[in-house]
Amino acid sequence: LEGNGNFSARYRDDASALRRLDGKVRLRLPTALESLDFGKPELGKQLENDVIGIKLNSIKSGLLGFRILKGRDKLVNFRVLNQAGQYIGPSQLNIQKDDNGWYANVGFTGTAKSVELIYAPAQEVVSYPFELELAQPQ
Image (cartoon, rainbow, N blue to C red; front, top):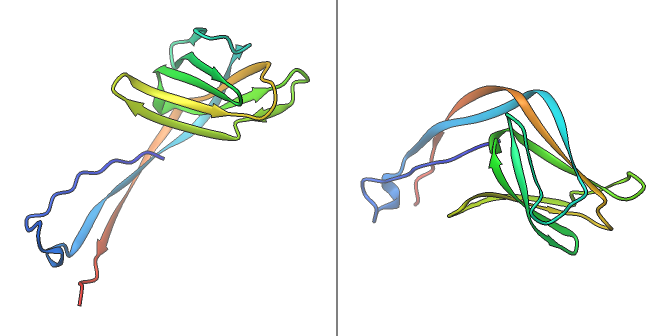
């Protein structure tokens, strides 16, 4: 799910001037999924193909921090595995942007032995317009 919005009101001091809000919700629906084996998490390690790229920037107890080099809109999830090949994360996934680009923080429980990157090389983009009539303050 992806969203953004811009808003400006002609009468900024008068909330009653806002009577209607419209826009569209745009979804990128994966039509195919693939995975890349990142292997053992090592600081500075980078993995990239023609669709997506990541670099491991930080390793903390229960948290891996990746810089997304390309293909942020194709990123679906990460899989963190332990020594036995059992799934141990993400217990949380946070993707955010700062002045230097996009980052993903991947939480897990246990000891991470390997990481897989799940991405959608093919997607269908669909848009749904909406319109909201807003109740006026009494």
